Length: 608
Ligand code: AGP
Picture 1 (cartoon, protein in one colour):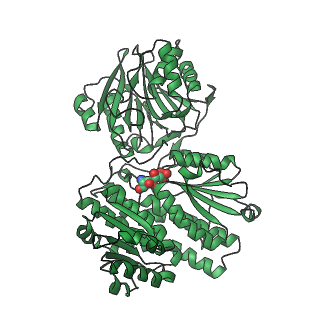
Picture 2 (picture 1 turned 180 degrees about the vertical axis):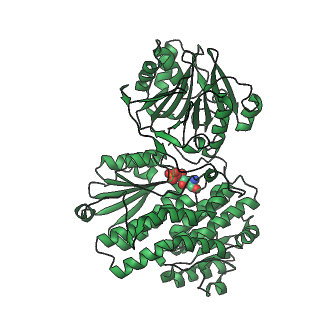
Picture 3 (picture 1 turned 60 degrees about the vertical axis):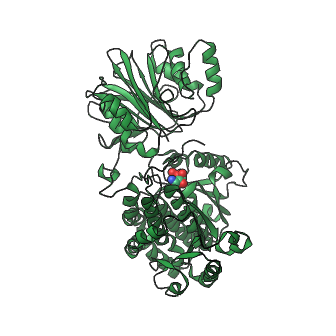
């Protein structure tokens, strides 16, 4: 998704803007630009493609003078990734420049109205209506022009604005898209997320939807939508620069796979005190808890896959009906959700449009909502009644790894906590599960250590045209994530399939060309899974099995094996996904793919 940055201070703005945009690259983009105030004018430089093009034409920003400006990386939604469509967009008279992340839903009507009034449009974008509205409403007060402009907009937007008649001043506006203010000494910033700020400051202000701010080098003033000044608290970002760097690994994805033990510790340890699970962010009275008669877990992509794992665990321990729903489906399905429904919304970024919309839909139907989110202060976190942060640290690779496993860890904690409070998990089982959860970081490290051969197996199979991932129960839930990991970074087609379903049609596709990855960790159904392995082998398929390290029988059945350390059956999905993350990573590596920034993908899908 798009990234926006703004800077005002006493150092040259353009280099600061370009390094800020560099830190937002992982959000996915296909054009970029900056606009800087200088001697009563606004200097604008834009490019299609990646930032190196902008760095080349501006000599890394050195040949763009000025101390106050805005920047943008655009992930095309309306209009192709061309220079004309790249942001910033400039008003016809050159007095205003705007950068935008989000979608102006009513842009067509506004465009027609503005063209009627004589404004000339140069781009195909929705954003351009904003800069012409500012021009239309400006009569000397930038604040008033912004308020009148924003009042006309429908949709989602994080805006950055500069005006040549207000030297040194930036305007930042937030509505449904992420935007954070950075507080410096004699300089101030805004950005789509903290990774663009932490090289300069760790003191930030989180804007709420509907708020906007004026930033000068000396001062930040925040206003509500009515223009009333607000006193906003300062927050401290604990993420430091190296946490958002690669840490010596070739790719962010490998770094983030390897840091999962540490991430899981950060997720779990603060929530287990003296053998008891403590969930500060989730306050339900016993009566409210007893009043829940269904749980709906909703998310997109890998977050949905984490939710699908959680569905099995929560239903097993809480004995309440639990279903996992794709947010993009739930939001339009007229769901049966009411005040007796607990809706758990999962999102690493907290800015996924479909997930936000599904959350709003469930709230409107009276549900109690709980968010499981990694990014502090994100939209999902603020919209939900309660939030449990995963505290996984910044996840830069587009393909999530620690985001997924820490989401499952929260679901594990929640399922055991709720099951115990509902009296459906007896003391001995509770203690064993709490102990098992606390051991997950170490189990995850062992899963990494057990699979040093993942790279060799990936090399052996990296040219397979298509793969099937098959499993039953929790193994099937893990298949979903394993399959997506392979597809999104290696561009090889794969499919997650309930092993028991193969004979109902799909087995017709199995032949000697196929590689079938058989997840056989769920012991209660191990024999059933082995039968499925025999079925596909009888039709010529090669089988790469994933099994617990004590399950020696698997070696007689499969061609190759990835091993998973022993742990409680309900807690296996976290160590089980590790070798499959590594397998996908090395397949993509051998295929020379752009692992951290896969084609067509964005880290956070903030538009429908
Ligand atoms: C996962 O590797 C993908 N990048 C994608 O499926 C992602 O999980 C999905 O877009 C949801 O993102 P969120 O967790 O930030 O809401």
